[in-house]
Image (cartoon, rainbow, N blue to C red; front, side, top):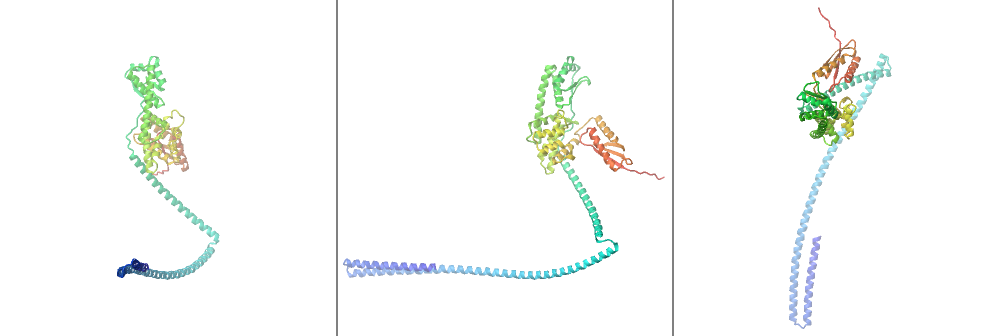
Length: 522
């Protein structure tokens, strides 16, 4: 339709052009007439105008034909395109119709299958109802027969049956719980051993126990006299300034110093070594040397605390905590250096926490600070766990750290995992070979005392201290001690050992009660 409108507009334009040419010719003729031109000139003008009009008309016709041809071609293209689109739509419609037919056929098959299934279910339901009615009738008949045979009513029979079933269920439940508990215990013990083994293997420590040195060699008796001074004024001044007790006469060639404060003892030892090397031993010189040595030891403790914090990777410690850690350098427990022990516990606790998927950094911090109370336990009343917990709380440590410091010697009462971890690490570090040592005489005395405490209880035949005093096995008379009494006796022995003896780690008390019958065949 647009192409036809364009053709009409083109023909109209040609007509306008032709009219303009004719008008121009007529105008020219009139002008010629007005100007008095000749008739021939007028005819010539008219002839020229006619020729020009015919040329314009021919040209317009040619352009009109070309436009019509172009319009026809465009129309044919559009028609062909529309025809292709219609064919594609017809094809899609036919395909959809085929799909719909297939789905209708599938639905029809499914409907038939559902109807057949419903018929089968209906038949099975009817059969089940018939069998249920038959079974109920049989059960009723059997109940009547059982009631007649047993002489019991329905309520009584039900009560007996329920009691029997309840007993069986309780027995099976108890057996199931016991099996589950045993399996969980075996798995837990195995996993705990694996974790401890991995942590111990990862701990590379070549440190061995060291003894506290509180003796100083003197080169001669003349030097001993200088140390004592006139009427003992030098040794009294030394004891007053250092706060240690000095024993000169008991052991030849050696000066022995004793003090409950390990830092004071170390200051006294170093000061005496310097005085002996200098040779000038008099009260003013003693005061000056001791003052210098105190500053030296304090600076050494501070540097030791900083170095330990750096080596263990524990950041953000309070300056006072760093100083207290440094004091542990001169503190020993059963021959084991407490600072080195704290480093080991920190490493072990961190590795155990890593193995358990916990915060290793927090465990290392708790392990490093667990014995911090020993730095001031000679100045503050109470046990070192309580003192350490108070210090940790004072310096704004996290509750997990405070709890681990205060409860690392009481793992059964621990309510936080980090306390148990630190307790285990403490036990591993203290009990490993070479960690602690004591003199042979004290070792034997401790074993004898352990056996003596156990034998003191009624019904005990004999007791044996084994595993370097970490376990005592007690054999009781089966005629005098029954099973209930055996448990109480074992608990009382453990309490007596805990109250009367001093020992590293823990002591396991194993009580054995058995009855033996012996006969001889002759």
